[in-house]
Length: 216
Image 1 (cartoon, one colour):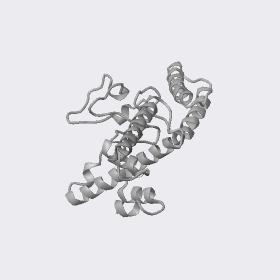
Image 2 (image 1 turned 90 degrees about the horizontal axis):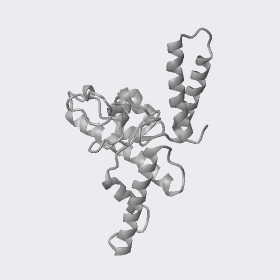
Image 3 (image 1 turned 180 degrees about the horizontal axis):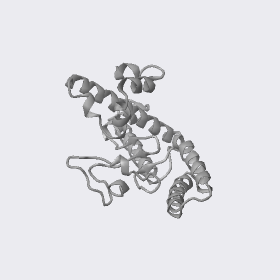
Image 4 (image 1 turned 30 degrees about the vertical axis):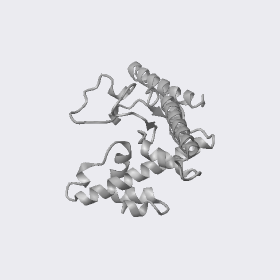
């Protein structure tokens, strides 16, 4: 079903309704084991569909970057832009040597797919953590990583401070709303001092994210 609904309007909503959190969880990290226990063939189909959907979103970022549009803000976005530039450079080299049979964007898309860039799409940010080289991952700092776990620890994510984070334009309304909500909460009278301190820290984190995006 995931492979079918992706080709029709409202596909993400349909997948979400039918598979609950499976698709969302998979885009963030990996598929949810409980949905796959009884049918290995379904697990393969879902994994394939999710991988293709992830690549579609990556390709959209690549194309937007090629048009000179901002794909996001923060260190993760800078890393991704460099990776995209390397793909285009390699494509040009293939064309110049005659090894590329086509002269259109499909050359870049083919290279992009074979490059296997690491990216996990999320509601608050996108994560570019490389499982084989998790340098700068705030979620892994001083963390006890469960045996066998690979990738980020989603519940410890620090989007505003992590060097693997991309804050895209689609995320900004959420950050702006959070800033307004925290600021309103901070102004309440008789708020305990420790609660104020916590809110102040949260406001600083949100402002860091917005500053990176040029919003403050």
